[in-house]
Image (cartoon, rainbow, N blue to C red; front, side, top):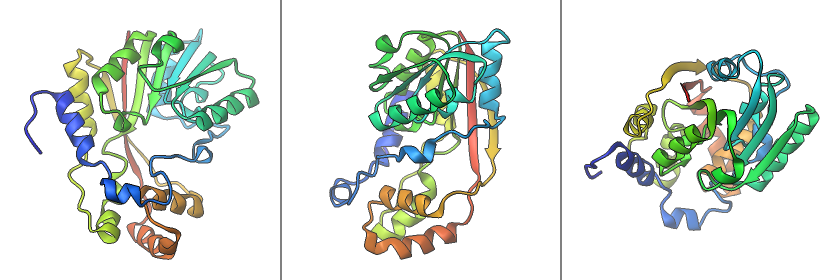
Length: 259
């Protein structure tokens, strides 16, 4: 990888180096970047995570409005019910926004959805007391403008949650097994924080672990096969390979700052 002159350029290089080769992507039976909204439906009882606690501190006892960027089905914002008075969700995927709207309606929470990528959708999304963005960073090539726009949209502060290491790195042994593809080193949260510093953001950082949790094996297998661009004929072999990797805990990082 060539030497780069800035943290933002290094970040871009790290992500682009791990892009799926064009010939593998072209032969994929499904879009490897697609997510199934069902995997992201939030539970009725939110986890007491550092990210949730940081957002609740920013909201304070009086509560307030929240903007969830890259909302998926709404887990980050809905974890703040009932302190949140109104939730705006931004996502580039329409099926995710439909899941977000349904989850808000089930909880009787006032909400609005904005379709589009961030920060292009920032003007339409407007401002909120608190901005949250969970697990979007590693999908964002231009991270500096992304986080700068998060801060500009927040009256009180921002909470970002992401993996300590690129979330796709756990599949690296399977890329080698099924495609003979040896992946380059993954980006990490330290690379993220270097970009934050470069744009003048010096946040509070909490590193924590989410223990391995029971999941739907068939859903997880579908996810792994789609990510690996593999056909249905490989299903049994992929199931065996994933099982050999064993249960996975998640090393996570909560990054927060006040406006």
